[in-house]
Length: 362
Image 1 (cartoon, rainbow, N blue to C red):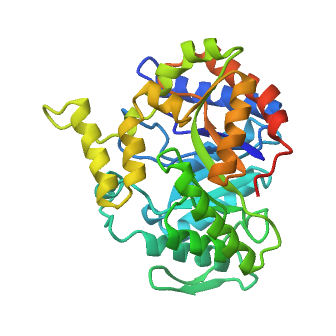
Image 2 (image 1 turned 120 degrees about the vertical axis):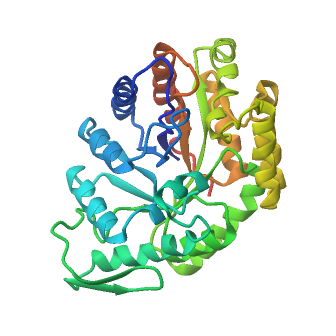
């Protein structure tokens, strides 16, 4: 298995943005010394109550500059919000600045709220994202200057001043549970994965199909399939539950819709539930409805809270059911104090990673 530090870079009411970023770099520096493989961040916009990370490129440059072996990347760029040529230039420069340690996630975007202020149509987002994969390969190809004419992106005779260090490009990721997207990723050799709101027992069969499609495509390596959720490790199960469980049940509050005047927390939660029902994702709607119930998330192991031994056992079981070989842990959540945060990361790195490093679920 492989292991990643994952961060929404949640805003903290008792911190300035600079203080929050300084804390983030301390997290990554510790992960680097403990043998973590990756560190990823999101690209979110316009929600100061939620994420303070709108630029994965800056995150990757700063994170890689402060580490020696960790591969720091985006999970991922919201492709439709970027001009394709500008994004291709940026990815190449970030990869050079990081010494070839950049991981490149590409996503179409999940929130309409990111698109409206940019004046971009939220309903027209998947096609440009898929096409950007071929655009990127043309931009970094042998024929230079390059020309690309697609349905969404058109560039004539452009010569990039800087090419990426990794050839033909940095490793690509596209987190998705959508079957057509997974089919595309398998064909194109793109790593994938999913988040807490997709039930693992539903995910297993879907990613088995992804693996079958991947193998059929004849790629020379195995894919990375990631799973991301909140994690808190402490010396004992009792201490972990006392320090981490309630906070874990508040970790994803920022992902709920903004409250309209007079709306309650329950109103926002009902809106979020209905969003998944409207998409036909009944299992996900049940998870979302219960994300803020400490007993439910503990009983159903939606988060991993416990001693190193307990967390390693739960994580292995989850990987078997959910068909993932890369775990992306969200270690910093809610109002978790920094001492507990860094202890959790250290215990995970010193005890959980060695216990699972040689385990391969597929």
